[in-house]
Image 1 (cartoon, helix red, strand yellow):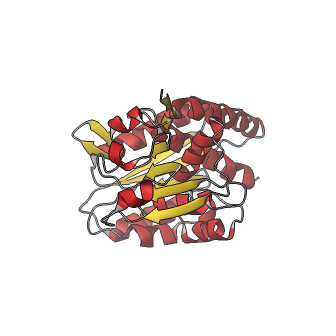
Image 2 (image 1 turned 180 degrees about the horizontal axis):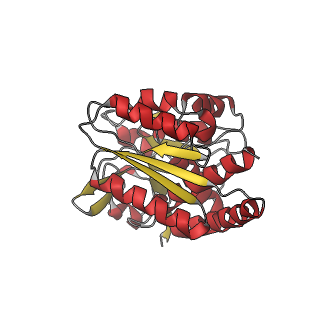
Image 3 (image 1 turned 135 degrees about the horizontal axis):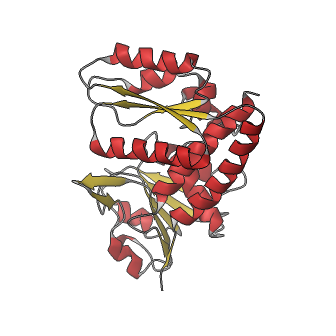
Length: 281
């Protein structure tokens, strides 16, 4: 019978640690601050940002927010980045991804102070990840590893296939999976590869990182595999994971449609924030 990788359980444990560390900082006269920049009016992104602020409040972290209208232009985004860089109350911040057409996310990220990078996506911090040096880790990939670690799933020597190679999930996750201490054998498969199942059927662990509903189906998985849906899509107000729910009929472990990777992503974001505040002392 399949078991579920409940991200909410993992997030609770991470946030308990974050709250304790926040309280110690406050006792020293420092209140950690997380900033968010939302460009445009993408509904799911706005919901994510709202959840992040609610979670900040729950653990004692200050939150700051900037809304940028879709028609305002790249210069407004860059000015907001500069404002957050200069704001001493903001220890770390994010630019919510994706941004609307006409905005350059990568340019904006490159202007961010690397020490204030809450999402671990600044080029300097991604470089540290490649070199396995300390730095903020990308939150969704780190959340997936935290989840597997919580459920005592040993990845050393396992055949792991990541479907999707985007810069916020698939690519950094592959680096984390192959890093010292994790030691998995990692294959990254682009979503346009015509024979994806040839790779996934041989995998001990499969991670969907595409953002396309049910791109991974039951016939693509070997019995007993561990399957994680990292990518999601929204259909109206309904969240659709990369992994079809029928996969649960043969997998040994699977993320649920709701309460899987999402809660761990938010928790790891706040952990990066509190770490940035600690580093500033």
